[in-house]
Amino acid sequence: MYDKVSPAIMKMARFYSHDKNTSVKMHDISHFMKVWGFARTIGLAEKLGAEAQETLELAAVVHDIACPLCREKYGSTAGPYQEREGAPMARRFYEEFRLPEKQLHRICFLVAHHHTYSAVDGLDYQILIEADFLVNADESALKPEAIRTFRDRVFRTETGKHLLNTLYCPDDPRNAES
Image (spheres, helix red, strand yellow):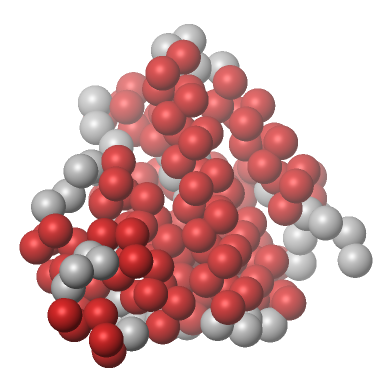
């Protein structure tokens, strides 16, 4: 099977390399790599099928593709802006990959909804939300109570809960549940 994820990662690194601000560029690249790593790990541990795993990983690579545009256009990378602008950018990004339309549609859907925590319609969607939060919690220096609240309200996978508890809530007595 042809690996599409590695070329997507290389292309995404080139995409961000055009940013003149080195710290922003490195943050963006580091962020998508960390989200991809968590998404890959959770997806494999939760036993996603091969096609869903590939779709998840391809979506994780480009989930924040709209951030540079949003910084320029809105002065913010807030979730609603990313969701509004990201799907068409992801579609253009993956044109040369000749993905099946169903897969490309799902990637674009995930990019367009990765900050929407209601009406999650699949394990790939759930995992992307969890992977992104695991990274954002650290990057945003969220307080432990905010992390626990998000875990209790949004996290559904056993692997995602385990990672969150291990990284952020090691002394929480509720960890015995996961």
